[in-house]
Length: 123
Image 1 (spheres, helix red, strand yellow):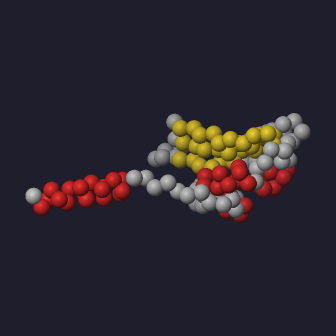
Image 2: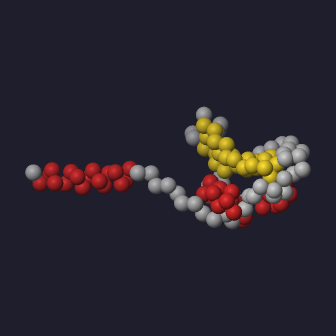
Image 3: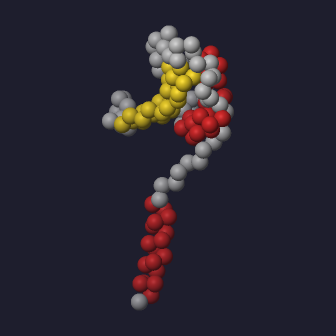
């Protein structure tokens, strides 16, 4: 009988322990944005919300955006109308990625920011 009294408490504790805690957003910081921790930019994903709300605005120029976020990382084309930044890459146990997230900032032909989006790819 006494063991049955502990069962609800045990269930509650297991629920709390098994819940995945979401990470909180952090404010955009240019130096942290450009700092790679070991093999990835593990803090960039937490900055995306603040970056998109408070820094990247429609009408912003390509050079101004590049000055804020750094050089175009993922595009090989010099005349591209996009800036692409690695947010997250998961390699799993292989050398080929199994999941990636990329921030893509698009511009029109006069180098004015038109949109931002996050591309999420999973194998």
